[in-house]
Amino acid sequence: MTVAASPLRWSAAAEAAAGITEAWAQEGGPGGAVVVFDTQALRVEASGGLESLATGVPFSGDSVVRYASITKHVLAGLTVQREGVVGLDDPMGQHLPGLRGEMAAVTVGRALDMTGGLPDLRETLSLLGLSVHTATEAPELLDFLCRLAALNFPQGSEVSYSNTGYRLVEAALARKGLAFADLVREEINAPLGIAFSAPELWFDPVRDLVPGYWKSERGWQLANAGLHLSASGSLTGSVRHLALWLQCLLGDRGPARGWLARLSAPRFLADGRPTRYGLGLAWSELGGHRLVGHGGSHAGYKNYFLLHPALGVGVALVSNREDAAPYGLALKVMAALLGAPLPQRSERIPDALYVSDTGPEWLEMKGSIATFLGTGDTLYEAPDGWSVSLSAHLPMRLRATGGAIEGEIGHVARRFRPAVADGCLGRVQGRWVCPGHHAAFDIVGDRLEMGVGPARTRAPLVELGGGRLVAEGRDGPWTKRACLAFSGDRVRLSLNRSRVLTFERAG
Image (tube, rainbow, N blue to C red; front, side, top):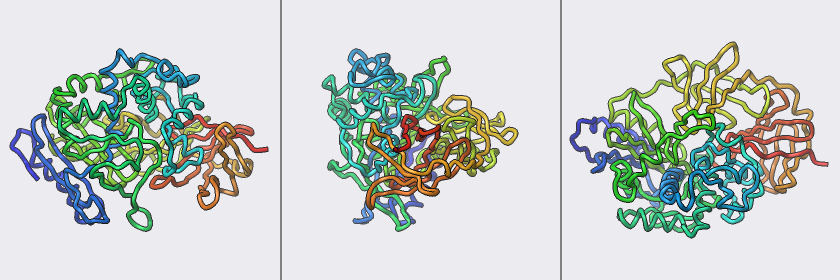
């Protein structure tokens, strides 16, 4: 570990970073690395745990991981440099003529700033019964999206995270002869002397790539994913190379000149309200300091970086363990560097399962964690008495009132009441099919069953009231909690990032 003198609290940051990595080292499992830097040098570096449980090699600053969604700002930056080729105001259908309906009308900018309403491909496939391990290729996935056509919500009306926009923009650039991997190699790696890689498949060999791990009831397991790796999350590299790139971003120099201001500039909903998510970068606050950054999550890999543009400093954290909470860990190191207080978790809202009056929206409160349509985030105390998330892509502002929960999620006004069973299960037994995608599931007793042979899965069902159920299943290392909203002989399946699939009663 190295620490350099500075008016900032480098020693405190070093201590915070060491506390994180030493805990991984003492456990003897997978690990990670943390670096703290300014625009000129890496001032703090700490690593701990193992890069491979098979070889016992320690994790280091040179260990190569999958950056996952940290990739997003790189694609966005390469895109805005080419606005004469693919413009932010262009409808996606202009560049991908196979797209249909509402999806074709989504602009490139909204596809990148999380206001496009584009259903997330991975979550949509999971609702059709494809596991995280199922192998898929880019052409077939683009064809699937072209057939899908529908949006989760009208573009510009909400903020909700989706990887699909980045996949589509990458495909649009590729149609112009601009391959993402080539652009990264020629315009970022070559001038900086770093080794980012952009494999298309999980199983493509990547030099020095360390395995990712998740913990099951049997202990640590190797992680894998079959979905084609688009530029929503394909980049790999070490934490040192990531920090060298981020120094250029912070210092507004080299291949990143002009990127930070452009990618972090305010974006707006259709009604003019600003959001905190830009183009592959998200804003947050810590003790009066404005920070910008992004996380990355692949099966077995958890990463985050935070930058303080006004002070010219940053933190980057990478890991090869599914159970890491990278945003909270990076925030802890940044707080130590700045001498700023960490936000206080909120426990103002009673633990319970809540549901909207109509539609598939539901909310679970458990401790400080609010889970909306299956996606959870921590709520913190706000000075005005509300409970808020710090996430720019899942913004929540909630409070309990009269036994109900009210506020905003995704910048949309919402109200939830306690869930009450209504006997829905007894009315929806049997087979339900989605002919357009050749998918089906069965409701048998209090279970949803989907799949074939030994791969058939069974998910317990919980009644929400109003003809709605929640299926609580697993998808590899992740919990999957989908809502089933019934209307006569039709049922809509929804996760937070995918709300467009409808099944109908068989026969």
